[in-house]
Amino acid sequence: MTLTQLEYIVALDTWRHFVLASEKCFVTQPTLSMQIQKLEEELEVKIFDRTKQPVVPTEIGVGIIAQARIVLREAGLINQLIAEQKNTMTGELRMGIIPTLAPYLLPQLFKNISEKYPQVKLIIKETITEEVVHELKNNRIDCGIVVTPLNDHAIKEDVLFYEELFVYVSKKNVLHNNKKYVLPSEIDPSQLWLLEEGHCFRSQVLNLCELRKYSDLHFKYETGNIETLKRMVDKSDGITILPELAVMEFNKAQLNQVKRLKEPSPAREVSLVTHRDHLKTKLIKTLKEEILAIVPKPMHKLQNKKIVEINY
Image 1 (cartoon, rainbow, N blue to C red):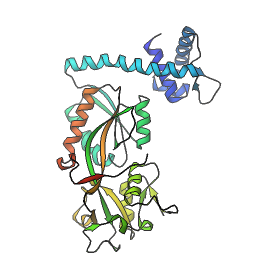
Image 2: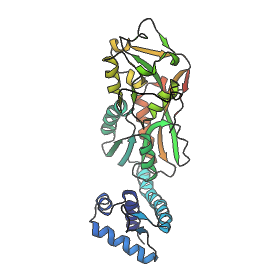
Image 3: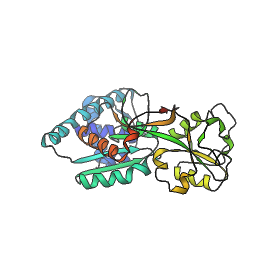
Image 4: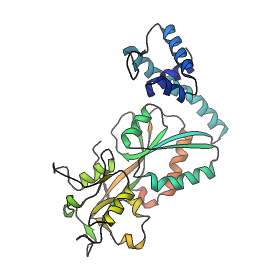
């Protein structure tokens, strides 16, 4: 039994396709298949059921693969120990980030890391929270930047900052004039523009505006992009809810369309998440420091803010 063979069975379990798994391992499909078969012969069990498409682990295979993931994580600690002993900042860091944070953090984050740590390769995947968690558990990424709490015992959450939520109102909307603060009860559900299903920010807006009690909501348009929501409001008499980092980029005219909700201000908690058995501690610690350097210090604390519930 070799570490390479363990990597191959983990890859096949992750991707559930021999060709795709071999591509991810940078070997030919016959090589991967042969090594997995050799491991099965050595253990005298079938790890995968090849009669099904996509290929799936057998009952005993599930346990073997789970143990293989543990072994590979532990083996990875050796490289981490060597890097820390040499006090070098090198290697590859795979990160997932949700779309409602990516446009406001990534440009500056990528610039800072590439300039300060040229030997660090940052690989970023923009996707929804559910997928970030799935990728972490399957060791496809090293960390993620998402909205928490996740309430998942397998995931470690390290809070970064708290992002206040604001109301963005069309100039044509009745709430635009002479209104410094807006109450959630004043928001007309028929005028509210939302992100599409699957986004945690959508869930928070529904809870904030108490819209879950309406069973017959019909929204004219749904998108996965906050910038699109802003433009839809500008072209209509609608309303949307925006996170603080998005509002910080507004010009003076746009800021006149922003209304606050009464204190304690609704907010979302943003965290750096990892698998509890994660590696690359030094790289992840550096990533956290660089993110905090980008975000204004007042956002580091929950003062006068209240976290809005998320329904995952």
